[in-house]
Length: 217
Image: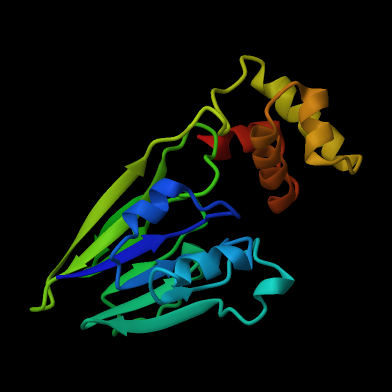
């Protein structure tokens, strides 16, 4: 039986639990938004890494492809960061791996498996921290194991009761060009939460407070 680790959206964080789950993997698939080359270097110490570039992977990731097709142990994979950008012509694909939404998804369409392992990096609001492990038998059959990781209180944590005021404050301070640390102090929230609201605001031009709340759910 072959073990393949499937992760996405690390955003510069490689949790000890993730490394533990990836032990004895023969390959690692990463759905993008790596954020730092050091993350890939650490993963490559475990097994070969097949990775695509996410929307938050900037100049350092110029040599990383936006999509990747690879066959491992008889299973044909197609990897891309954003599900909305999956091309129509993927006829020879058994499993499509993607990320971006930070939400775990495992669905079958026309006999093909579509898998988003979720985010195993910073916790996004109340969403769980997840990844997946794929087990492949020598006869070509496979099974997916969803892994939900424990998170520490140092993550984004519980939502403040005055969430709308907090989001409006973060948006205003972001427009002023303040750092995440300054924004967190002025809004009275954790830096992790401030950083995640900033990211949603900056990556969705024109979004309002209610729109950000909707994307947090």
